[in-house]
Picture 1 (cartoon, rainbow, N blue to C red):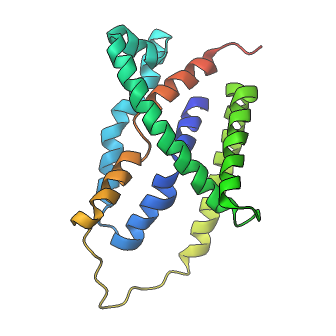
Picture 2 (spheres, one colour):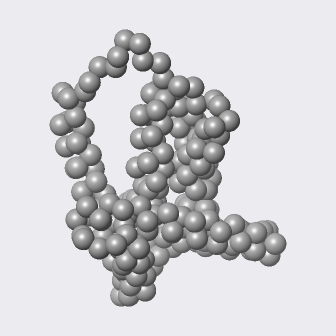
Picture 3 (cartoon, rainbow, N blue to C red):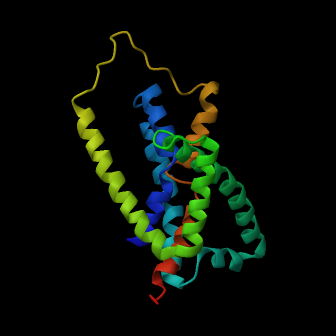
Length: 205
């Protein structure tokens, strides 16, 4: 449960809170099959990390190294680029939501989120991250169910002359690529899951 919950939590971000909601708001159900298809196509990559680690007792990174250092360096380079973009995006998204509760500039809140995350990882390691993530996922699940229940009877019918725009236009290509790339998570999450599984298997001190 630990690594799987962590992976699910890591997937929740701009793709779920921004991209998918925008897709539904602007295009209705037109992109639902795209989201489902991307999830299905990425599943083997997500499963590979956990299965490789369970079978060999080593991380997916060691598997890349066995194929050759070039593969490991390529993955590392791509992961660094993606990590910078995703960390910046998630910090700003979290800070934007925190502005509703904490009267501080968004830049300061983003820095606070980043520092808090670093402290958690450096001093809490996997165990604390695992516990906090389970609490967060429980809270997210509960609040999502509550929000869905409250919104169920408050839907507004569309106007009779409403026509949803087509997403298959050049103006929306950037959005579509970003949505598919981050939905449900970037493929490098498979390596993270592999490392988390190794940490989970370590004996408790």
